[in-house]
Image 1 (cartoon, rainbow, N blue to C red):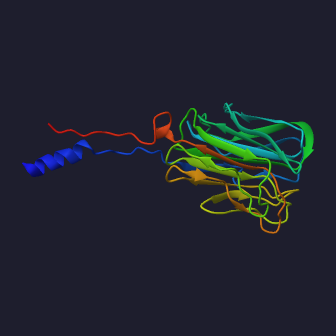
Image 2 (image 1 turned 180 degrees about the vertical axis):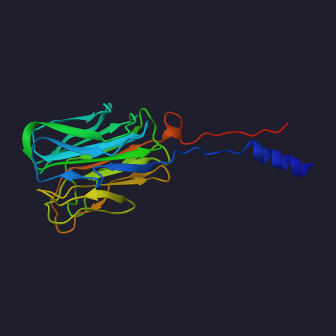
Image 3 (image 1 turned 90 degrees about the horizontal axis):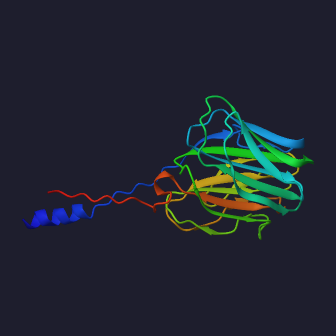
Length: 251
């Protein structure tokens, strides 16, 4: 009888975590970054396709201190939320957008960023993820006009509220000589030395709530620029805490 009571007490307190499982699906362009040696008012890339309900994270940077940018895609016509805008340092301006609930695209979905002035050295990158909340996925965001350590760029700190979040880091600096690489627990998505600068971006799925910052190495460049971090909650945790608890009762 005692053993049965102990087992029942254990089962009554049993909990089942339901964290979302983020996964990177595809990049825009396939190499993760485009631009640099260009001029005009637009820069574009194409997702080979998009899955319904996924999240699209897109950023663009350009050598300008005054121009502003907007984003659109075709044929999907997704709605984008501005995550960061007009962060300017060392002649570079950075924008970040997210589409939380992507429309399915069986073929190429073209992302176009339009600047309101003719510019040189425009960059663009995009990534699609599954496992996201389809509304209000943004948890934390912070952007700085420059890093206190140009050779090892870092973003401001943010503290996540849920476990299993998607973290995005971006550095829009460098002088075009050496590729920016990820540091710490981050994984580089893409980087380039094409054009004036050496922008790069990275991601990670955090295991637990905590304080995070984007971390890069800009070896040999030490040329500052905007840094960014943003974090996004997954499907199971949006608006409802880090896990769902389920009690099991036997009668």
